Image 1: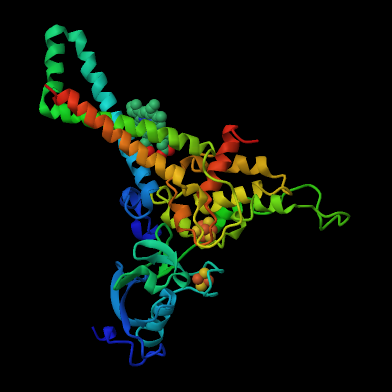
Image 2: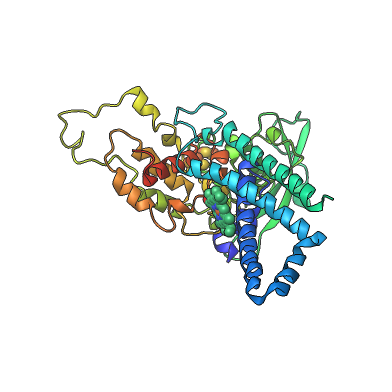
Amino acid sequence: MKRNENREGIKGMANPGRYGIERFAYWLMRITGLGLLAYFIGHIYETSNIVNGKTAWENMLSMTQTTEGHVLLTLVIGMCVFHTANGIRVMLGHGGYGVGKPARPDYPYTPASQNNMHKLCIYASIGLAALAMMYGMSVLFGE
Amino acid sequence: MSETALAEEQSSTEVSSSKIVTLRIAKFNPEHDSGQQYVDFKVPYERWTTVLDAVLDVKKHLDHSVAVRYSCRQASCGSCGMKINGRPRLACFTKISELNSDVVTVEPMNNYPIVRDLVVKLDKMFANHKKMQPYVIREDSEITAPTKEFNQTPEQLEEYIQFANCIKCGLCNSACPTMATDSSFLGPQALGQAYRYVADNRDKGKYSRLKIIDESHGIWRCHFAGSCSQVCPKGVDPAMGIQLLRGYLLGFRK
Ligand code: HEM
Ligand code: SF4
Ligand code: FES
């Protein structure tokens, strides 16, 4: 029961607005991870259709030629790029790289682990994802 | 509601105060209430009035029953942690004026059982803190064999002193997204303290502590969202300590 421990639950965990860009990146990382997993499973299902012959394969493939298909693929591109770029940042951080050095803290106590390098990497990951999506759209929707 | 009458007239707070804030207090007694109820109070404030001052003002003049825990009033004892306008903060270390809001909502911190109103039970956090063996571990002792003292240079002190600043207020655990869903997670407070002792040059208990935190609801549940460090009122930066500990476990650090 919520009252017992007053836990924030999924809603609090997923609420990305209150704690700065790092919490937003955490949230995006989870969402894109799950999104990619869903795509990956769908992708296996889609490509496994090749055993049903050429027509079945081409029928399946035509799904990606629609506007909805293009939007979906554009999203997948964005998720892929953000998840990979931010994943590299997170993995380095998890290994203890780039999280700052312990030091006697001074008011106003800006935490060294939430440094500008990390913020920059998060913004860069989002920017790269946006660029890749734009390029993807220009190819998918082009001509 | 009659309680919302201005505190100004009876309040001991300076009457010349020009500004009034609405203090919205989440009231809840788990023994007989079915849910939280928000009650509004109008409280005068000055530039320097803290949220704790305002809550105590309400308690003194408008509603004696408001439950709040505090002691030092100077961000040292760690008693007065609560959720203020949606974020965990120390009530005694947060000024009304810095919140830039006409309504200040105070609620009990998340991820702890509510004792009553704004008071939460910190027992589990203290238990997890104790699990970290929060003391210098070594065979010999300055105390029982007082033939020598354990030396520490100022540089060696710098390695951990920031983590020793922890006042066990529990704000970090309340902000943590893993804590929000996992009741067995050790939490940033405890993990930060594990680092505090591991980084102490006098201590020899590193492997013992690394073993304790290397469990399924231990250090690996941290996703480095950093919210703990952002709410810590003492500059402890538990997120840094956790990643540095993970560096030891993964073999990137010696
Ligand atoms: C080279 C590319 C990738 C990198 C560098 C990467 C990196 C990471 C990292 C570091 C995490 C942990 C994040 C955290 O601790 O919060 C993670 C989580 C995850 N990844 Fe990836 N990943 C990559 C590709 C993929 C792909 C292709 C998929 C899907 C098939 C995927 C699915 C997931 C899922 C489901 C999670 C868990 C999300 C969560 O619970 O927070 N990842 N990834
Ligand atoms: S690490 Fe900071 S926020 Fe957490 S209990 Fe200690 S002082 Fe409070
Ligand atoms: S009353 Fe001691 S920390 Fe706020």
